[in-house]
Length: 305
Ligand SMILES: Nc1ncnc2c1ncn2[C@@H]1O[C@H](COP(=O)(O)OP(=O)(O)OP(=O)(O)O)[C@@H](O)[C@H]1O
Ligand SMILES: [Mg+2]
Image (cartoon, rainbow, N blue to C red; front, side, top):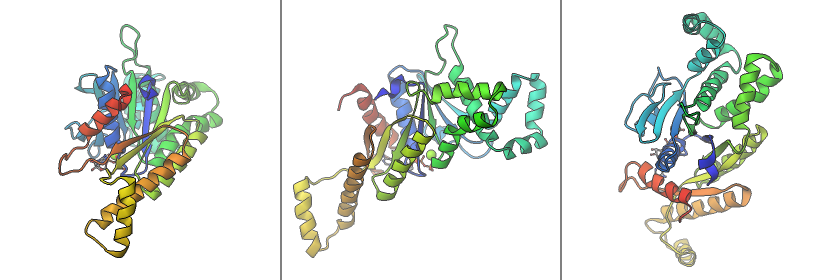
């Protein structure tokens, strides 16, 4: 896994596949290697709860990073923070805060196409560029729990779109700087989380294509919730034969595992990036799958099976 060498990793995929769970496990495993990790998410910190926060026993997470474990910080990427930071380069601080908090300006910013994404993008850029006294990056690895598919592409395609509209000036400079991180495969990559089922696999393959179109490097695919199979391939064949004539208790589960294997085969045949398989963690033995998944990922990072 090269991802420990990256500065920014986007965790994306369709709704409910486990993006938040995988992001939390990756952040834990990466921070345990000694990297200073920032785990972040998008949204409005003033409304609702924080999905990544809940994985660390916090209902809310602020735009300002907070330490939750050794080498691990959480924060929230917020369009408004980005707008404030951006305007802060041009206007006095008090004026900026007043402007961004005014209802009229807010309405304008939310309505203007791509302005929301631009704010998030700028907040992210500021965190990527933050340095310590010795010049080293404050956040060596930033992992983003991205919202579902469409929003990811809105963010990764933003610099190209804006640069076409506004090729010069401070916005263009920020976009070029951001592209320097996101579109450099040595610095940034996206991981697509999916489930071993037909439709999610199809969507994951399409999302990889979408990422390519926005020049975002794909690090790989996380095949999440892969069910353990108690049968060898030979036993499975024999079992399938029996089940054809004699329906039995457990048949649905037997078929679900078979379908998962089939979906995994299709995924492996269709993609040219690494695929990491994470097990289905059964709630009865482990209500929170994050610790188990962290162990699996930590082994993958060390290159041990
Ligand atoms: N490997 C796993 N084993 C068992 N349960 C899992 C696993 N991965 C995720 N889950 C469970 O699946 C549910 C959805 O996971 P999660 O919230 O991470 O998905 P998501 O993609 O972030 O969803 P959303 O689209 O709502 O943001 C959670 O209840 C989580 O605990
Ligand atoms: Mg989530």
